Length: 232
Image 1: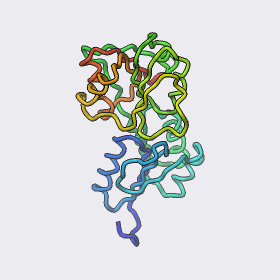
Image 2: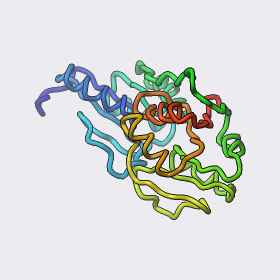
Image 3: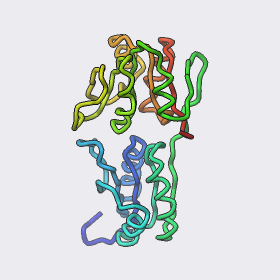
């Protein structure tokens, strides 16, 4: 869009997911006359490049988001955040009402248990921690902010995969750290599980395609998955 041309609409995407990135790309291509802004929480130090504009950091609660919507002239708000990002999603609903801006919710559909899946379904991360048997070797597929909860399990070996190096040493007494994004295919994830002699996976039912490869790999290897549901 030329600098001297006013946008016909301004769309704010609450992002941080692969689906949000794909949506931004689609909207920029389909609406060259519009202003497309993706908001990121800022947890990933070097996020992948995004089409359109990028805003990083929090808004300051419901009122802060509503103020941003008003001051920026947002005409449409899209919540494409992670399905477990409950606070920002709740804030988006109320802020959209305050600002009088239409809200489009693009929450991923949860994964459905398939034949061959061995899921231990729990409601909370605390229940997931307690469900791990002694002497297990666990792929802990969770955000960095949830890792410390498992520090009490000194009878378990954890393999932790993170996009960025942790700012502080992990509190887990017995663990291995892998830096990088999840594998794109079940074959890649299968190799990782075998290489680390993984016996269990702990993850949340986030849905989507990008993180599903580990679930398919677990099915192939007949490994138990301790699955935290969205009600937790």
